[in-house]
Image (cartoon, rainbow, N blue to C red; front, side, top):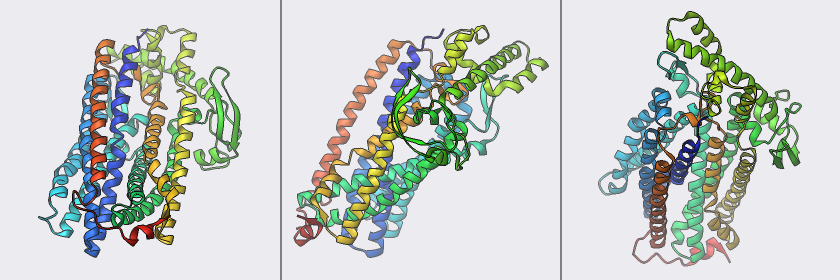
Length: 521
Protein backbone atom coordinates (compact mmCIF):
# COMPACT_ATOMS: atom_id res chain seq x y z
CA UNK A 1 0.00 0.00 0.00
CA UNK A 2 1.09 3.56 -0.76
CA UNK A 3 1.07 6.17 2.00
CA UNK A 4 -0.95 9.01 0.51
CA UNK A 5 0.01 11.53 3.22
CA UNK A 6 2.59 13.26 1.02
CA UNK A 7 0.13 13.34 -1.88
CA UNK A 8 -2.59 14.81 0.32
CA UNK A 9 -0.27 17.48 1.72
CA UNK A 10 1.03 18.29 -1.76
CA UNK A 11 -2.54 18.69 -2.94
CA UNK A 12 -3.24 21.08 -0.06
CA UNK A 13 -0.15 23.09 -0.92
CA UNK A 14 -0.99 23.34 -4.60
CA UNK A 15 -4.60 24.20 -3.74
CA UNK A 16 -3.35 26.99 -1.48
CA UNK A 17 -1.08 28.50 -4.12
CA UNK A 18 -3.47 27.95 -7.05
CA UNK A 19 -6.53 29.37 -5.33
CA UNK A 20 -4.57 32.32 -3.98
CA UNK A 21 -3.18 33.02 -7.45
CA UNK A 22 -6.70 32.76 -8.85
CA UNK A 23 -7.73 35.71 -6.69
CA UNK A 24 -5.76 37.93 -9.10
CA UNK A 25 -6.41 36.24 -12.44
CA UNK A 26 -10.11 37.10 -12.94
CA UNK A 27 -9.63 40.77 -12.07
CA UNK A 28 -6.65 41.01 -14.44
CA UNK A 29 -8.65 39.48 -17.29
CA UNK A 30 -11.66 41.70 -16.80
CA UNK A 31 -9.98 45.00 -15.93
CA UNK A 32 -7.74 44.76 -18.98
CA UNK A 33 -10.80 44.69 -21.26
CA UNK A 34 -12.54 47.46 -19.32
CA UNK A 35 -9.43 49.62 -19.69
CA UNK A 36 -9.59 49.16 -23.46
CA UNK A 37 -13.26 50.19 -23.46
CA UNK A 38 -12.67 53.25 -21.29
CA UNK A 39 -9.60 54.39 -23.21
CA UNK A 40 -11.43 53.89 -26.51
CA UNK A 41 -14.05 56.36 -25.31
CA UNK A 42 -11.23 58.79 -24.43
CA UNK A 43 -9.65 58.44 -27.88
CA UNK A 44 -13.01 58.93 -29.62
CA UNK A 45 -14.21 61.88 -27.51
CA UNK A 46 -10.95 63.48 -26.39
CA UNK A 47 -12.56 64.26 -23.00
CA UNK A 48 -10.08 64.47 -20.12
CA UNK A 49 -12.42 62.74 -17.68
CA UNK A 50 -12.15 59.47 -19.64
CA UNK A 51 -8.37 59.66 -19.48
CA UNK A 52 -8.63 60.15 -15.71
CA UNK A 53 -10.98 57.17 -15.51
CA UNK A 54 -8.62 54.96 -17.52
CA UNK A 55 -5.55 55.94 -15.50
CA UNK A 56 -7.34 55.39 -12.19
CA UNK A 57 -8.56 51.87 -12.98
CA UNK A 58 -5.20 51.22 -14.63
CA UNK A 59 -3.49 51.87 -11.29
CA UNK A 60 -5.66 49.23 -9.62
CA UNK A 61 -5.00 46.89 -12.55
CA UNK A 62 -1.25 47.38 -12.06
CA UNK A 63 -1.33 46.48 -8.36
CA UNK A 64 -3.33 43.35 -9.13
CA UNK A 65 -1.15 42.43 -12.12
CA UNK A 66 2.14 42.57 -10.22
CA UNK A 67 0.95 40.36 -7.38
CA UNK A 68 -0.72 37.99 -9.83
CA UNK A 69 2.57 37.46 -11.65
CA UNK A 70 4.47 36.95 -8.38
CA UNK A 71 2.07 34.28 -7.15
CA UNK A 72 1.84 32.56 -10.55
CA UNK A 73 5.59 31.97 -10.80
CA UNK A 74 5.48 29.88 -7.62
CA UNK A 75 3.11 27.39 -9.21
CA UNK A 76 5.52 26.69 -12.08
CA UNK A 77 8.19 25.58 -9.59
CA UNK A 78 5.76 23.35 -7.71
CA UNK A 79 5.43 21.02 -10.67
CA UNK A 80 9.08 20.11 -10.21
CA UNK A 81 9.25 20.34 -6.43
CA UNK A 82 6.07 18.53 -5.43
CA UNK A 83 4.89 16.74 -8.59
CA UNK A 84 8.08 15.49 -10.21
CA UNK A 85 6.69 12.13 -11.36
CA UNK A 86 3.72 13.91 -12.91
CA UNK A 87 6.14 16.24 -14.71
CA UNK A 88 8.17 13.26 -15.92
CA UNK A 89 5.11 11.26 -16.97
CA UNK A 90 3.32 13.98 -18.99
CA UNK A 91 5.86 16.81 -19.27
CA UNK A 92 6.16 16.51 -23.05
CA UNK A 93 2.46 17.32 -23.39
CA UNK A 94 1.61 19.48 -20.41
CA UNK A 95 4.76 21.58 -20.70
CA UNK A 96 4.20 22.65 -24.31
CA UNK A 97 1.16 24.93 -23.72
CA UNK A 98 2.87 26.47 -20.69
CA UNK A 99 5.98 27.22 -22.74
CA UNK A 100 3.88 28.75 -25.51
CA UNK A 101 2.03 30.82 -22.90
CA UNK A 102 5.33 32.28 -21.74
CA UNK A 103 6.59 33.01 -25.26
CA UNK A 104 3.35 34.23 -26.86
CA UNK A 105 1.33 35.77 -24.05
CA UNK A 106 3.31 36.57 -20.91
CA UNK A 107 6.20 38.23 -22.74
CA UNK A 108 3.69 40.32 -24.70
CA UNK A 109 1.88 41.70 -21.68
CA UNK A 110 5.02 41.97 -19.53
CA UNK A 111 6.84 43.90 -22.26
CA UNK A 112 4.05 46.35 -23.02
CA UNK A 113 2.62 46.87 -19.54
CA UNK A 114 5.39 49.40 -18.81
CA UNK A 115 4.49 51.39 -21.92
CA UNK A 116 0.86 51.30 -20.86
CA UNK A 117 1.66 52.91 -17.50
CA UNK A 118 4.44 55.31 -18.46
CA UNK A 119 3.72 56.03 -22.10
CA UNK A 120 0.81 58.44 -21.78
CA UNK A 121 2.95 61.46 -22.67
CA UNK A 122 5.28 59.61 -25.05
CA UNK A 123 2.79 57.87 -27.34
CA UNK A 124 -0.06 59.19 -29.42
CA UNK A 125 -3.59 58.47 -28.23
CA UNK A 126 -4.08 55.72 -30.79
CA UNK A 127 -0.67 54.16 -30.12
CA UNK A 128 -1.31 54.12 -26.37
CA UNK A 129 -4.73 52.54 -26.93
CA UNK A 130 -3.08 49.89 -29.11
CA UNK A 131 -0.61 49.22 -26.27
CA UNK A 132 -3.44 48.83 -23.75
CA UNK A 133 -5.24 46.50 -26.17
CA UNK A 134 -2.06 44.43 -26.59
CA UNK A 135 -1.75 44.05 -22.80
CA UNK A 136 -5.38 42.90 -22.66
CA UNK A 137 -4.76 40.49 -25.52
CA UNK A 138 -1.70 39.10 -23.77
CA UNK A 139 -3.62 38.61 -20.53
CA UNK A 140 -6.38 36.70 -22.26
CA UNK A 141 -3.97 34.65 -24.40
CA UNK A 142 -2.14 33.72 -21.22
CA UNK A 143 -5.38 32.34 -19.80
CA UNK A 144 -6.03 30.47 -23.05
CA UNK A 145 -2.78 28.49 -23.02
CA UNK A 146 -2.96 27.74 -19.32
CA UNK A 147 -6.50 26.47 -19.74
CA UNK A 148 -5.44 24.35 -22.72
CA UNK A 149 -2.93 22.67 -20.41
CA UNK A 150 -5.52 22.27 -17.66
CA UNK A 151 -8.15 21.01 -20.08
CA UNK A 152 -5.79 18.26 -21.22
CA UNK A 153 -5.68 17.08 -17.61
CA UNK A 154 -9.48 16.91 -17.68
CA UNK A 155 -9.69 15.34 -21.16
CA UNK A 156 -6.31 13.90 -22.29
CA UNK A 157 -6.82 13.89 -26.06
CA UNK A 158 -4.13 13.75 -28.73
CA UNK A 159 -1.78 11.60 -26.65
CA UNK A 160 -0.93 8.01 -25.81
CA UNK A 161 1.19 6.01 -23.37
CA UNK A 162 4.43 4.67 -24.81
CA UNK A 163 5.49 1.47 -23.00
CA UNK A 164 9.03 1.85 -24.39
CA UNK A 165 9.61 5.19 -22.64
CA UNK A 166 7.03 4.72 -19.84
CA UNK A 167 5.66 8.21 -20.54
CA UNK A 168 2.70 9.89 -22.17
CA UNK A 169 3.55 11.33 -25.59
CA UNK A 170 1.82 13.66 -28.05
CA UNK A 171 0.18 12.02 -31.06
CA UNK A 172 -1.88 14.98 -32.28
CA UNK A 173 -0.93 18.43 -30.99
CA UNK A 174 -3.83 20.02 -32.87
CA UNK A 175 -6.22 17.85 -30.83
CA UNK A 176 -4.56 19.13 -27.63
CA UNK A 177 -4.96 22.76 -28.73
CA UNK A 178 -8.54 22.40 -29.97
CA UNK A 179 -9.67 20.23 -27.08
CA UNK A 180 -13.43 20.90 -26.68
CA UNK A 181 -12.97 21.08 -22.91
CA UNK A 182 -10.34 23.82 -23.39
CA UNK A 183 -12.70 25.84 -25.55
CA UNK A 184 -15.53 25.59 -23.01
CA UNK A 185 -13.26 26.31 -20.03
CA UNK A 186 -11.60 29.30 -21.69
CA UNK A 187 -14.74 31.20 -22.66
CA UNK A 188 -16.39 30.39 -19.32
CA UNK A 189 -13.33 31.44 -17.30
CA UNK A 190 -12.68 34.71 -19.12
CA UNK A 191 -16.38 35.62 -18.93
CA UNK A 192 -16.25 35.02 -15.18
CA UNK A 193 -13.19 37.31 -15.07
CA UNK A 194 -15.12 40.01 -16.91
CA UNK A 195 -17.92 39.69 -14.35
CA UNK A 196 -15.39 39.96 -11.51
CA UNK A 197 -13.94 43.19 -12.88
CA UNK A 198 -17.39 44.62 -13.59
CA UNK A 199 -18.53 43.96 -10.02
CA UNK A 200 -15.30 45.48 -8.70
CA UNK A 201 -15.71 48.66 -10.76
CA UNK A 202 -19.42 48.80 -9.97
CA UNK A 203 -18.82 48.42 -6.23
CA UNK A 204 -16.02 50.96 -5.99
CA UNK A 205 -18.02 53.44 -8.09
CA UNK A 206 -21.03 52.91 -5.84
CA UNK A 207 -18.83 53.58 -2.81
CA UNK A 208 -17.75 56.93 -4.28
CA UNK A 209 -21.35 57.87 -5.01
CA UNK A 210 -22.43 57.01 -1.49
CA UNK A 211 -19.61 59.22 -0.18
CA UNK A 212 -20.39 61.92 -2.76
CA UNK A 213 -16.79 61.78 -3.98
CA UNK A 214 -15.39 61.66 -7.54
CA UNK A 215 -18.93 61.64 -8.83
CA UNK A 216 -18.10 62.29 -12.49
CA UNK A 217 -15.67 59.38 -12.63
CA UNK A 218 -17.93 57.11 -10.58
CA UNK A 219 -21.04 57.81 -12.64
CA UNK A 220 -19.34 57.01 -15.94
CA UNK A 221 -17.49 54.00 -14.54
CA UNK A 222 -20.70 52.59 -13.12
CA UNK A 223 -22.47 52.89 -16.47
CA UNK A 224 -19.65 51.05 -18.28
CA UNK A 225 -19.43 48.36 -15.59
CA UNK A 226 -23.20 47.77 -15.54
CA UNK A 227 -23.50 47.27 -19.31
CA UNK A 228 -20.30 45.26 -19.64
CA UNK A 229 -21.16 43.19 -16.57
CA UNK A 230 -24.70 42.40 -17.74
CA UNK A 231 -23.43 41.06 -21.06
CA UNK A 232 -20.69 39.10 -19.29
CA UNK A 233 -23.00 37.62 -16.64
CA UNK A 234 -25.43 36.41 -19.29
CA UNK A 235 -22.57 34.85 -21.25
CA UNK A 236 -21.29 33.07 -18.12
CA UNK A 237 -24.63 31.29 -17.78
CA UNK A 238 -24.71 30.28 -21.45
CA UNK A 239 -21.08 29.20 -21.49
CA UNK A 240 -21.47 27.38 -18.19
CA UNK A 241 -24.17 25.34 -19.89
CA UNK A 242 -21.63 24.44 -22.59
CA UNK A 243 -19.17 23.33 -19.89
CA UNK A 244 -21.86 21.02 -18.51
CA UNK A 245 -22.36 19.56 -21.96
CA UNK A 246 -18.66 18.69 -22.30
CA UNK A 247 -18.80 16.70 -19.04
CA UNK A 248 -21.23 14.25 -20.62
CA UNK A 249 -18.56 12.85 -22.92
CA UNK A 250 -15.42 12.74 -20.81
CA UNK A 251 -16.24 13.29 -17.11
CA UNK A 252 -19.48 11.47 -16.46
CA UNK A 253 -18.65 10.80 -12.81
CA UNK A 254 -18.10 14.50 -12.11
CA UNK A 255 -21.46 15.33 -13.67
CA UNK A 256 -23.25 12.64 -11.67
CA UNK A 257 -21.53 13.73 -8.44
CA UNK A 258 -22.34 17.43 -8.74
CA UNK A 259 -25.98 16.43 -9.25
CA UNK A 260 -25.83 13.79 -6.46
CA UNK A 261 -27.50 11.45 -8.96
CA UNK A 262 -26.92 7.93 -7.68
CA UNK A 263 -28.99 6.00 -10.19
CA UNK A 264 -29.45 6.58 -13.90
CA UNK A 265 -32.80 8.28 -14.41
CA UNK A 266 -35.22 7.89 -17.24
CA UNK A 267 -34.33 10.34 -20.01
CA UNK A 268 -34.36 13.28 -19.92
CA UNK A 269 -33.09 13.56 -16.34
CA UNK A 270 -34.29 16.27 -13.99
CA UNK A 271 -32.02 18.90 -12.43
CA UNK A 272 -31.69 18.94 -8.64
CA UNK A 273 -32.09 22.47 -7.30
CA UNK A 274 -32.02 21.24 -3.69
CA UNK A 275 -31.25 18.04 -1.85
CA UNK A 276 -29.23 16.48 0.96
CA UNK A 277 -26.71 13.98 -0.43
CA UNK A 278 -26.24 10.93 1.80
CA UNK A 279 -23.04 9.08 0.94
CA UNK A 280 -23.65 6.29 3.46
CA UNK A 281 -27.09 5.40 2.14
CA UNK A 282 -26.16 6.41 -1.42
CA UNK A 283 -29.21 8.53 -1.94
CA UNK A 284 -30.21 12.20 -1.96
CA UNK A 285 -32.89 13.14 0.58
CA UNK A 286 -35.55 15.82 0.06
CA UNK A 287 -34.57 16.29 -3.58
CA UNK A 288 -36.39 19.04 -5.46
CA UNK A 289 -36.05 18.63 -9.22
CA UNK A 290 -36.81 20.64 -12.32
CA UNK A 291 -37.94 18.01 -14.83
CA UNK A 292 -35.95 17.44 -18.04
CA UNK A 293 -33.42 20.26 -17.48
CA UNK A 294 -30.33 18.14 -16.70
CA UNK A 295 -31.00 15.88 -19.68
CA UNK A 296 -31.35 18.87 -21.99
CA UNK A 297 -28.17 20.52 -20.67
CA UNK A 298 -26.04 17.37 -20.63
CA UNK A 299 -27.20 15.67 -23.84
CA UNK A 300 -28.93 18.40 -25.88
CA UNK A 301 -31.76 15.93 -26.43
CA UNK A 302 -34.92 14.47 -24.91
CA UNK A 303 -33.73 10.87 -25.11
CA UNK A 304 -30.05 11.14 -24.09
CA UNK A 305 -29.05 9.37 -20.87
CA UNK A 306 -27.14 10.88 -17.96
CA UNK A 307 -25.58 7.99 -16.06
CA UNK A 308 -25.75 7.78 -12.29
CA UNK A 309 -22.95 7.21 -9.77
CA UNK A 310 -23.68 3.55 -9.03
CA UNK A 311 -23.69 2.40 -12.68
CA UNK A 312 -20.50 4.41 -13.27
CA UNK A 313 -18.81 2.67 -10.33
CA UNK A 314 -19.69 -0.66 -11.94
CA UNK A 315 -18.12 0.55 -15.20
CA UNK A 316 -15.00 1.67 -13.28
CA UNK A 317 -14.68 -1.79 -11.76
CA UNK A 318 -14.67 -3.36 -15.22
CA UNK A 319 -12.11 -0.85 -16.44
CA UNK A 320 -9.86 -1.55 -13.43
CA UNK A 321 -9.92 -5.26 -14.25
CA UNK A 322 -9.02 -4.47 -17.85
CA UNK A 323 -6.36 -2.07 -16.60
CA UNK A 324 -4.69 -4.91 -14.72
CA UNK A 325 -4.37 -6.72 -18.06
CA UNK A 326 -2.74 -3.61 -19.55
CA UNK A 327 -0.41 -3.31 -16.55
CA UNK A 328 0.66 -6.92 -16.93
CA UNK A 329 1.40 -6.34 -20.62
CA UNK A 330 3.53 -3.27 -19.75
CA UNK A 331 5.59 -5.30 -17.28
CA UNK A 332 6.21 -7.96 -19.90
CA UNK A 333 7.25 -5.31 -22.43
CA UNK A 334 9.70 -3.84 -19.94
CA UNK A 335 11.35 -7.25 -19.72
CA UNK A 336 11.16 -7.93 -23.46
CA UNK A 337 10.26 -4.99 -25.74
CA UNK A 338 10.00 -7.45 -28.65
CA UNK A 339 7.23 -9.52 -27.06
CA UNK A 340 4.64 -9.30 -29.85
CA UNK A 341 1.88 -10.98 -27.82
CA UNK A 342 2.32 -8.56 -24.91
CA UNK A 343 2.31 -5.58 -27.27
CA UNK A 344 -0.93 -6.74 -28.90
CA UNK A 345 -2.49 -7.22 -25.47
CA UNK A 346 -1.37 -3.76 -24.40
CA UNK A 347 -2.75 -2.08 -27.52
CA UNK A 348 -6.11 -3.74 -26.92
CA UNK A 349 -6.35 -2.67 -23.26
CA UNK A 350 -4.16 0.46 -22.95
CA UNK A 351 -7.05 2.94 -22.53
CA UNK A 352 -7.66 1.40 -19.10
CA UNK A 353 -4.07 1.34 -17.85
CA UNK A 354 -4.71 4.33 -15.58
CA UNK A 355 -7.59 2.50 -13.93
CA UNK A 356 -5.30 -0.41 -13.18
CA UNK A 357 -2.87 2.01 -11.51
CA UNK A 358 -5.60 2.98 -9.00
CA UNK A 359 -4.90 -0.36 -7.31
CA UNK A 360 -1.39 0.79 -6.31
CA UNK A 361 -3.04 2.58 -3.43
CA UNK A 362 -3.86 -0.83 -1.96
CA UNK A 363 -1.29 -3.25 -3.35
CA UNK A 364 2.23 -2.88 -4.76
CA UNK A 365 1.49 -5.08 -7.77
CA UNK A 366 -2.01 -4.52 -9.22
CA UNK A 367 -1.93 -8.05 -10.59
CA UNK A 368 -2.10 -9.33 -7.01
CA UNK A 369 -5.22 -7.28 -6.12
CA UNK A 370 -8.20 -9.00 -4.56
CA UNK A 371 -11.80 -8.52 -5.63
CA UNK A 372 -12.39 -6.39 -2.54
CA UNK A 373 -9.46 -4.12 -3.41
CA UNK A 374 -10.76 -3.72 -6.96
CA UNK A 375 -14.14 -2.67 -5.57
CA UNK A 376 -12.53 -0.16 -3.21
CA UNK A 377 -10.51 1.30 -6.08
CA UNK A 378 -13.70 1.57 -8.15
CA UNK A 379 -15.34 3.61 -5.38
CA UNK A 380 -12.26 5.85 -5.28
CA UNK A 381 -13.42 7.20 -8.65
CA UNK A 382 -16.33 8.91 -6.88
CA UNK A 383 -15.34 12.44 -5.75
CA UNK A 384 -16.77 14.10 -2.63
CA UNK A 385 -20.44 14.25 -3.60
CA UNK A 386 -21.73 16.70 -0.93
CA UNK A 387 -18.90 19.17 -1.64
CA UNK A 388 -19.47 19.14 -5.40
CA UNK A 389 -23.25 19.30 -4.99
CA UNK A 390 -23.20 22.42 -2.83
CA UNK A 391 -20.34 24.37 -4.43
CA UNK A 392 -22.06 24.01 -7.79
CA UNK A 393 -25.27 25.49 -6.41
CA UNK A 394 -23.40 28.30 -4.66
CA UNK A 395 -21.69 29.19 -7.93
CA UNK A 396 -24.92 29.08 -9.95
CA UNK A 397 -26.86 31.05 -7.34
CA UNK A 398 -24.27 33.82 -7.28
CA UNK A 399 -24.28 33.89 -11.09
CA UNK A 400 -28.02 34.53 -11.31
CA UNK A 401 -27.74 37.15 -8.56
CA UNK A 402 -25.18 39.00 -10.70
CA UNK A 403 -27.56 39.09 -13.65
CA UNK A 404 -30.20 40.75 -11.47
CA UNK A 405 -27.69 43.21 -9.95
CA UNK A 406 -26.28 44.24 -13.33
CA UNK A 407 -29.72 44.52 -14.88
CA UNK A 408 -30.87 46.82 -12.07
CA UNK A 409 -27.69 48.87 -12.21
CA UNK A 410 -27.91 49.20 -15.99
CA UNK A 411 -31.52 50.35 -15.78
CA UNK A 412 -30.84 52.99 -13.13
CA UNK A 413 -27.55 54.17 -14.68
CA UNK A 414 -28.74 54.46 -18.29
CA UNK A 415 -32.52 54.90 -18.18
CA UNK A 416 -33.23 56.61 -14.86
CA UNK A 417 -29.74 58.16 -14.61
CA UNK A 418 -30.05 57.90 -10.86
CA UNK A 419 -29.38 55.07 -8.45
CA UNK A 420 -31.17 54.49 -5.15
CA UNK A 421 -28.92 54.23 -2.14
CA UNK A 422 -30.02 50.64 -1.44
CA UNK A 423 -28.70 49.59 -4.85
CA UNK A 424 -25.40 51.38 -4.27
CA UNK A 425 -25.00 49.67 -0.89
CA UNK A 426 -25.84 46.34 -2.51
CA UNK A 427 -23.16 46.91 -5.13
CA UNK A 428 -20.55 47.65 -2.47
CA UNK A 429 -21.26 44.58 -0.33
CA UNK A 430 -21.33 42.42 -3.48
CA UNK A 431 -17.63 43.06 -4.24
CA UNK A 432 -16.37 39.78 -2.64
CA UNK A 433 -18.97 37.58 -4.36
CA UNK A 434 -17.30 37.08 -7.77
CA UNK A 435 -14.15 35.84 -6.04
CA UNK A 436 -16.22 33.39 -4.01
CA UNK A 437 -17.92 32.18 -7.19
CA UNK A 438 -14.56 31.86 -9.00
CA UNK A 439 -12.95 29.92 -6.18
CA UNK A 440 -15.82 27.47 -5.76
CA UNK A 441 -15.94 27.06 -9.54
CA UNK A 442 -12.25 26.17 -9.56
CA UNK A 443 -12.86 23.80 -6.64
CA UNK A 444 -15.66 22.17 -8.61
CA UNK A 445 -13.46 21.67 -11.68
CA UNK A 446 -10.36 20.39 -9.89
CA UNK A 447 -11.78 18.50 -6.90
CA UNK A 448 -14.37 16.94 -9.18
CA UNK A 449 -11.57 15.35 -11.22
CA UNK A 450 -10.31 13.34 -8.27
CA UNK A 451 -8.85 10.73 -7.89
CA UNK A 452 -7.14 11.67 -11.15
CA UNK A 453 -4.36 14.15 -11.72
CA UNK A 454 -4.95 13.31 -15.39
CA UNK A 455 -8.46 12.01 -16.01
CA UNK A 456 -8.38 8.23 -16.51
CA UNK A 457 -4.59 8.22 -17.04
CA UNK A 458 -2.66 8.90 -13.82
CA UNK A 459 -4.00 8.79 -10.24
CA UNK A 460 -3.10 11.83 -8.16
CA UNK A 461 -1.27 9.89 -5.45
CA UNK A 462 1.24 8.56 -8.02
CA UNK A 463 2.24 12.01 -9.33
CA UNK A 464 4.13 13.29 -6.28
CA UNK A 465 7.84 13.80 -5.70
CA UNK A 466 10.01 11.72 -3.36
CA UNK A 467 9.45 13.95 -0.34
CA UNK A 468 8.48 13.31 3.24
CA UNK A 469 5.50 14.81 5.02
CA UNK A 470 7.66 17.14 7.10
CA UNK A 471 9.22 18.74 4.05
CA UNK A 472 5.86 19.39 2.43
CA UNK A 473 4.35 20.68 5.67
CA UNK A 474 7.26 23.09 6.06
CA UNK A 475 6.66 24.59 2.62
CA UNK A 476 2.92 24.82 3.33
CA UNK A 477 3.64 26.86 6.44
CA UNK A 478 6.12 29.02 4.54
CA UNK A 479 3.74 29.67 1.63
CA UNK A 480 0.87 30.41 4.00
CA UNK A 481 2.94 33.01 5.84
CA UNK A 482 4.26 34.55 2.60
CA UNK A 483 0.85 34.70 0.96
CA UNK A 484 -0.67 36.11 4.11
CA UNK A 485 1.81 39.01 3.93
CA UNK A 486 1.12 39.46 0.21
CA UNK A 487 -2.62 39.52 0.89
CA UNK A 488 -2.15 42.31 3.43
CA UNK A 489 0.02 44.24 0.94
CA UNK A 490 -2.54 43.78 -1.84
CA UNK A 491 -5.49 44.92 0.24
CA UNK A 492 -3.55 47.85 1.71
CA UNK A 493 -2.41 49.10 -1.70
CA UNK A 494 -5.85 48.68 -3.23
CA UNK A 495 -7.60 50.50 -0.38
CA UNK A 496 -5.01 53.27 -0.43
CA UNK A 497 -5.41 53.78 -4.19
CA UNK A 498 -9.20 53.80 -3.86
CA UNK A 499 -8.95 56.22 -0.95
CA UNK A 500 -6.73 58.60 -2.94
CA UNK A 501 -9.09 58.36 -5.90
CA UNK A 502 -8.61 59.24 -9.56
CA UNK A 503 -7.22 62.71 -8.92
CA UNK A 504 -4.41 61.68 -6.63
CA UNK A 505 -3.75 64.10 -3.82
CA UNK A 506 -5.43 66.91 -5.68
CA UNK A 507 -8.77 68.17 -4.49
CA UNK A 508 -11.51 66.20 -6.22
CA UNK A 509 -13.73 68.10 -8.59
CA UNK A 510 -16.87 69.35 -6.87
CA UNK A 511 -19.81 67.03 -7.17
CA UNK A 512 -22.48 69.70 -7.33
CA UNK A 513 -25.73 68.59 -8.84
CA UNK A 514 -24.14 65.51 -10.38
CA UNK A 515 -24.38 63.69 -7.07
CA UNK A 516 -28.04 64.48 -6.74
CA UNK A 517 -28.60 63.38 -10.32
CA UNK A 518 -26.92 60.07 -9.66
CA UNK A 519 -28.16 59.26 -6.18
CA UNK A 520 -31.82 59.09 -5.41
CA UNK A 521 -31.88 60.06 -1.78
